[in-house]
Length: 363
Picture 1 (cartoon, helix red, strand yellow):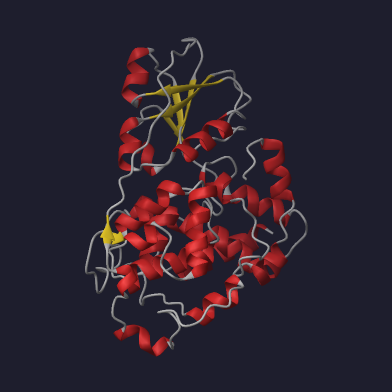
Picture 2 (tube, one colour):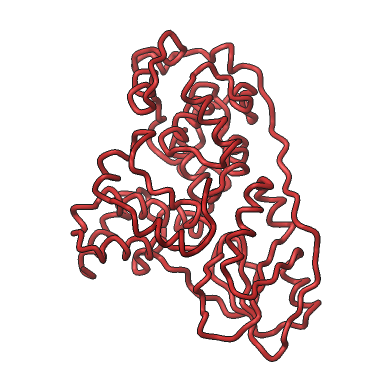
């Protein structure tokens, strides 16, 4: 379903219509870009996508919705870097009754047809429309009262655009651990944006009724997903000690990173990383196929320290990321959309105002 050749990915990036995106992005059949898996894997960057659309002579104010959606990604990454995102960020999630999740959500039988189709698509394709992601999170956390972390890990596991910052922060935003109020969507809203025509469900109510809504019977049985990653078998790699070594990982598969230099190029798959952030076999295969765009890439399955000691590597380069803080060597910055806007901002809109000003200054 998702392409993996860099030429086709860049063609997809070039085909983006930011005006149409802004008008229709909330609808399941809207003009979404489908670029998120490539941004999440570091094949392309938010900055690159922004510059691609601005190069077509759009004015920033004309494509504000599109630019804001890119900025949300960088905002969440800044939150991860500065505050951490593994626990409730702003306040404890309200009204939690369990730390698991509804079995009906896992099995795509919530009785909400659009949501169940979305979960089935997640399993079959590794992709779910962003609006449906919010619906799934709302039903799981705000209706079934599950704490966000277990379902967020389940969702991340299956997504091809698995990005722990965007995923964890979005689940926390939905359940009011990182926002001022819970996000709810009733059946009318779901019908409107999903093109469905379902009635008589537990969501077929007025918004005023959500605060006192009991957990529907279909969501009461709970289960904790068992998530594990099967990495490829370890294969030997050849390192030329006279050359620098560029270390890639699950979050950096940039095929154009420092291609001006002759170097060893190694995709590092650390078992410890995938124990903490497990992903599906489909996600690993997708990442390996994307890594195929990197010339002479070799795959090392093991820990960073093992890579360094087994091959006596000293001259190491890597890109900054919260999952790479234990790497040693020369750290290079990723391509931030607005590198001058860093640090923690209590709200996205305070962050966006700074970005908006920086973008206008550059254009």
